Length: 190
Image (cartoon, helix red, strand yellow):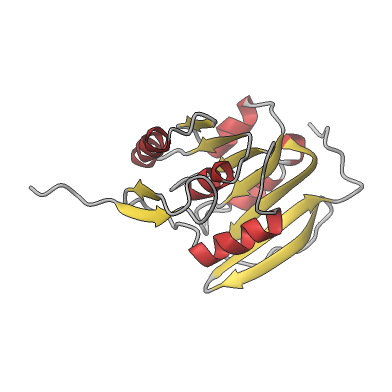
């Protein structure tokens, strides 16, 4: 039986520019398109020096590894699917990405256990499963003072009592956004 060929996605810029990340087929796994990533990192600023990042629902890991490639201090990649998690470990090893921590956990379990705060949180959950409603309420206590949350969704997000959408766009069927906490929202919410 022939060995199954892995899919690939390319890192756009930074130290690992043009390096390929390999990943298996998995239900709900959709790599963030290259032009979307270019826009997002333009929004974030090309250089993420000193930023602590969290990539929930890491999937291919391209958002987290892209952040490290652009000098982020560290990234935690959280992925529940075992085969996808193993591919993330392989990519971490191939890139020698010592500042990446890869965890085989459910996103909510991670948020329940972890007390760190992050400067950039990437959230790209499986569609049509209600993940955003469960995750966004957990994130204020995980976000640094000037932190932002990147969200991909199957629908456009709007401002609410906690979050302000300060950048958004659409590519095909993907709506993508940068959120920040409203000024009157506390970071110390439990």
